[in-house]
Image (cartoon, rainbow over all chains, first blue to last red; front, side, top):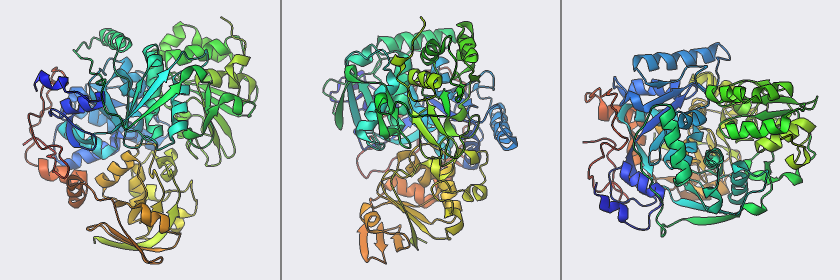
Length: 436
Length: 201
């Protein structure tokens, strides 16, 4: 490919990445392309079905054992015999195929937090994951999307995937976020504006002066919930924050590899541009049973809940844990509340341990686990019964998502979650005295 | 085979994959077991009432949320012949094509249809008829490339035909950068209606 093609104008970052990955000069929204995949991922629920499909395709070996990550994250440590069998199928495949990046329980975690932390994601990559929240990796300036097991099997066999080049919804965030406003509130605000399918088939590109100052943690939360707006992918064009993060993660894990910084042209064409005034934003809470039903926390304050969950691929990073611990420091969860805290990976758990955060959670009366999706998807660890109410830092509050079909789930950021755990009712964090 | 005729189960908007098959059943990949619980959180009587050949008709964003392929597998295994919706969530759309569950995007028929109506879907022409209401409409057509996957019976048989016998076994363990090799200058990969080669020649 000639470097001249990079000087074509009017292209979004997503179009540039997909053009390069498919060996073409230029792609336009709506085009179907065959893209070369940089990294393929599956978890304990999606991998077994993908492995079955892979075996039926009729090839003996995966396309590249170094570019596949298999991560047990959903029903681990095995919650029952059936789940143990799923784990065995994944493990045996990883062994037979000599998969380099197979993560064992206790050294693993939630894939969408684990892989960037482990230095396996870089700007410009094309990442395909058999999990809908695979859009998360886009925070590092790569194209990244979720697929089902059979599509993933195709990637395991060929290293390629067909993709429709998405139109892009550009979101321009401006202003300084208030003390209690983080990435979670920004993306809930966006989804409340566009609806649950407002970005269907599109890429969500997050830009604006707020983004340049936003931590990598908050950026990852923004892209994580692209799918809740129906989007194919979420992306933050790489900047100095991205480069510093990626270099550091590569260095820690000895995975140095070159990457570049593709960004959208100033005259790139967008299907739609949405402006969000972050300075005017309050912490947001999504009411049952759709993420788009998000409102400022003040509108739902006082709502009693039975359980508070701080965790998931959306909000279980160090920033999230530190915020929750600062609120809970020296306090107890309300006697009526079951508080569940799950740092996303074993590394984050250890870091939280060293910083004393785990002690704070335990003293507050939280049930603490590590490196698992937990109650987010209602399969395991904190499943809700009929009529129960939970405030969760996760990404979906669909009917039945966290357990019984008549349970209700509110979604919020970690500060709101911690404040709610203390009072037993949905609470604005500003009303809790924080020990510094 | 390409013309389906069945009774309508009329569902609303945003029928997500959690409600199609809740996570508590994801500890199995057995289609028969998944079928027993299909859509039970939306309507506990659905798995009991659904008949072989029935057609699900739903509003926007059908199959949103989780990428679980167990969802189209459960729908197909419980006897549903086809899903007609105003729009589909994209992962569910791909998964359905990949596992051979017929799906049709046709807002006009969705808007006209009620529970219990008789529907006829011609998968070859994309013509959808509500026989009860006397409404006929055309579905949004699939690109040629996707039609070939559908005609092969899904992505696995499609790839099997393409790959069988040409396994290079490139379990390379290479350290080259992600773009060490490109597809080469394959023209015509995009233009509307053009076929996309799934594999290198």
